[in-house]
Length: 422
Image (tube, rainbow, N blue to C red; front, side, top):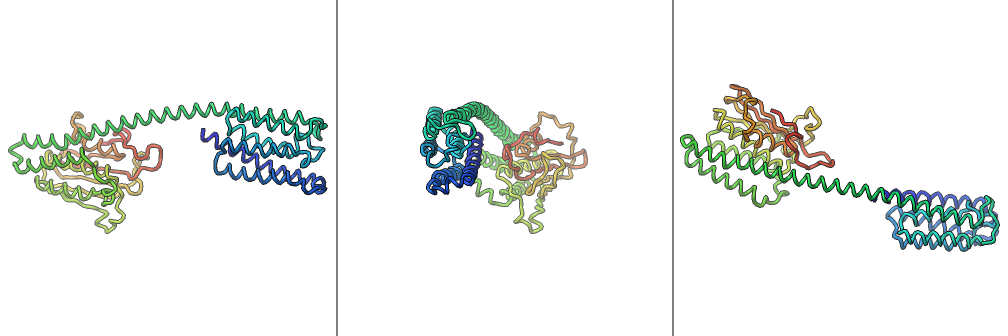
């Protein structure tokens, strides 16, 4: 409906401009009539000035019906004085400047007033034109009588009113369909958000409580102090996730959204558990820290948790006491869905341990699928895991950068949309 009203206003402006030009041409053609009485130029001058004012107004906003009524009143007054400002030979004709100006005015009345008001204004315009030309006036140069010209004005107004009714009905139907589609999209987004939140809680349960219970079950491999420390860490993490997240703007102001500090803290925790973790920041090492990617807080949190799960898997399964975490700008991707934009990021967790065959991993296991691959995919990233027996494991977490503007910008994505690879 908004688009239709804008088009109607643009058409009305264009017709008004053409009418103004036509008035000027008519004054030039009938210069002898206006030269005989310069005061006769008052009518065309008023029509030109008022038409230009209406054009300027329509460029800024749509007219209210009260303004349209004033607009019609100006032309009704000009029509009633046609005897003094329109040459006698053209007075009852449908080609004189007054008739063209009144036609341009009826477009605004038809499109921007209620039906009853539009009908009243059209009748008033037709009656004023007929009365101003003189009921007994002979046919003009074009063979049209004043009555025929007045009837033509009414037919012109009726045609525009019918067009308005048909187009407005279609526009209202389109708006209704758009509103229904928008409501459906909102419902789907709410459902997606709830599913993502549920999956994140499942991952958090796996990364904290289940891992801690596993450590308790392996009493011979975990000291009491280590288990207590892990329990405290798990409680703190769950309180942070389920409580008030704090000020996102403050967190976003930190390098990588605070991701480097969190990964360093993870390294300290893993060293306490017997895993020597080496953290390397490629951007910071080159002195280009000011150019560090701006990582949204939810993305940084997802990457840190995925790194924690990867390092926990090294402790549990790799059979090695050393791992490396490398942070670098993301290399351009080869596919459009995950092509890296400026500001992309790649975090790699690697070890030289026992390795494993990814194809043999039970699909029911949550560690790799839920806590790493799907967690990164939910925020538009891509996780890949490369490993082979005896050749160690490399976990690559790739975030392509801020979403490009579009209807789905900023929305988390499902694992299938992000194209998970193993």
